[in-house]
Amino acid sequence: MLYKRIVIIAKIPFQVVSYLLGINKLRPSWTLKKVLILSALREVTYISEKTGINGGRDHTKEVVAKDCLDAHFIWVDGVPDELIVGEVKRLAQVELDARPGARWGKDHSQSPWRRIHSRDGSPRGLDGQHPRGYLAHGISRVLSIDYRLSTTHPYPTAAPFPSALLDALAGYVYLVRTLGFKPQNVIVGGDSAGGNLALALVRYLRDSRDHESGLDLGIPGGLIAISPWADPVGTYFATLTDDSPGVVNAKTDYLRLVDKRGTVVSQHGYAARALAGPMSAEDATRSPYISPGSLNLTTDGLFKGFPPTYIVSGEAEALIQEIRVLQTRMKKDCEVVYDEVVDAVHDFVAFPQWEPERSETFKKIVDWIQNL
Image (tube, rainbow, N blue to C red):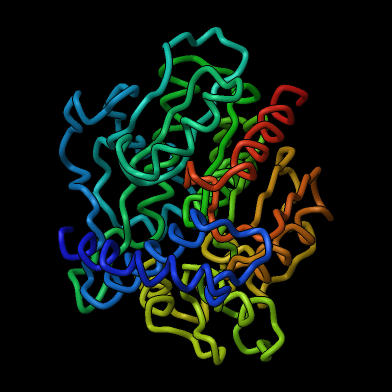
């Protein structure tokens, strides 16, 4: 969007002067480059929040070859009805159609590792930086599913839960049934809302094994959640104080969930309503699929049967409290590595300029994968 670019460029001189005066260097390790990145991201998220324009692409159309860059566009078939069971089937009031995705690297199903990355977006945008980060540090192939995004009033209501989950499931089924990968050789991952989705996908794969239908799609070999949106319904907001990390980090992160006074911003409420769809607010707080970090959940055995998991967060990000709750819960039931990166913001690995933390994080994750 041209207007966004004009606003961002116009503010660069002011941001440079502020940095030299020490005004906007809110963390000791932040370089001028990082400050400028954060300034641009705040403008983009603010304008999107106020206008409803997010610059996303039409998910029903194929990405042309020139925009795929180093990726290959493919269509993935929708999930067959017989693979949708339990609570997810009850809530699946959506049309099951083919879903778009992008594949990085050569297609060799006999390779020992393949990773599915649950994330919306195109190879040309910031979303493409996640698979490229893995490829740059030792992973040979990535499948990135371009899942449907939820919307609600004042925009047309579309794709509430479990739409995105079914799209992610379609990608997983494509790997294990169409291409023949063994489930243990698939690593499921995602960042931000995609991290929430990755958790939901693994939960469904676990839950469906115990369903009366006898469905068993296997359990993936590992789970990666980077800055996962663990409590979309915001049950922890009522516990916030002026000293809470979520409130303090509202001054540093570009993601706006609460303002500097700790007041919940409208953007978060909208996202939670769009995701929950016809589900009541109370039911959403008690759904581990929607909000695995909800304070209203019974936590005994909540993550039992989950594969080894690697969780990354930024110590300066707005979601830090709910991510800490999530990793504490998961450690009770499964093997978890938790990496909280000092002075890093939400989903910092999406930005190639956020170095050296970005490369260091990818190296650690890839080393973890190779030692599973």
